[in-house]
Amino acid sequence: MEAKRRFNCLVIMGGPHVNALPRSTLLAVPGLDAVIRGEGEVPLLALAGDFDASGKVDFSKIPGAAFLERWKYKENPCPELIADLDTLPFPARDLLDLSLYYPSRWFFGGKKSTTLLTSRGCPGQCTFCANICMGRRFRPHSPGRVVEEIRSLLKTHGLRHFNIYDDCFTANARRAAEICDRITAEKLEISWDAMGRVNTLLDETLILKMKKAGFRQVVLGIETGSQRLLDLMRKGTTLAMAEECCAKLRRHGILYSNSFIIGNEGETEETILETIAFAKKLKSDLVTFVVMIPFPGTPLFDKYFKEYDSPDTDWTNWCSRFPDRPYAPRQTALSMEDLMRFRNIADSRFHSDPGNIWRNLIAVARNPRVLFK
View 1 (cartoon, rainbow, N blue to C red):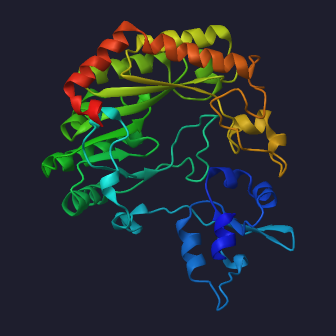
View 2: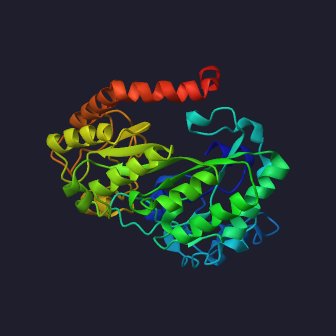
View 3: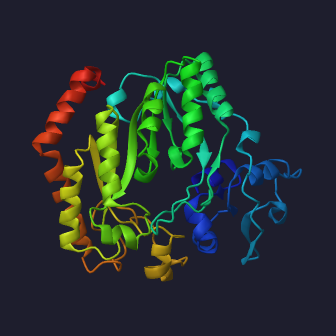
């Protein structure tokens, strides 16, 4: 709480963790004035207008605020999720030095870039996902508003690459197609990448529209090479869908980065080896293997780790990439050391695969500037 000590300011937290564990967070963090539950725009606007002459705020008036009053926990009802996202203004990117921002995907090195959020919420029901702030209901910006923001960024900042940060840009195929049609019709010379689900990227007509509009890469949550584990996590996809999706993307020259989780509920050594083999079978351009993190607020956390909802929990290494996490896996019989070892094996086997090496050499040949950045 160095900022509070130095500047005598309010300290407020938001996001998935405090939405799941507001009381524990307030009791555990000295100097924390309040946490905001739900989306932050409405509460923060109310907060900005409620300072009294002494700089204090009556948190009982702030929607979604949780706070301690004489060490007694209190919380206000969360505001309704914003139904019409078009009512929000564009982000104030003029407050940033945008020359410092480049695409996160190394294939696009050299282009000025920014993130773009065209929707909130994901209709998926995955048991490990911590998307509890934005809700499960898909709430999109209108196609016209999305293209207006892109046009503005092109004109004002000269930005030509966009990392669309929606949980699933293609959750509504008709809307995604309309956005792409408008970009193409206006001849906006841009490139962009996005995140998606394999069951929403099976339509080649949509893929071609996206490519024509500048779509270059997608990040797909494949998660595992075991259909049994996909069903346990309620992913709502199949291995066959993943194969079909990746084959169509590859056919049309779209790069795809696949992410996999090691340590899923019911994971065994056999299912991990199936996952490694499946990652290679999909001929992914990039792959990320991560060890399962039981995020607070998820069904996985509530089922196996609920007692960690305590002010005494040390969250420092909860997401560590090493075996020093402060908990042992319960969703699988494998130890944390086993999971980390298999993660390293997965990385090694995939990245030393001749097919993967060849694909990366081709990517560098297409864009040699990445070697000098």
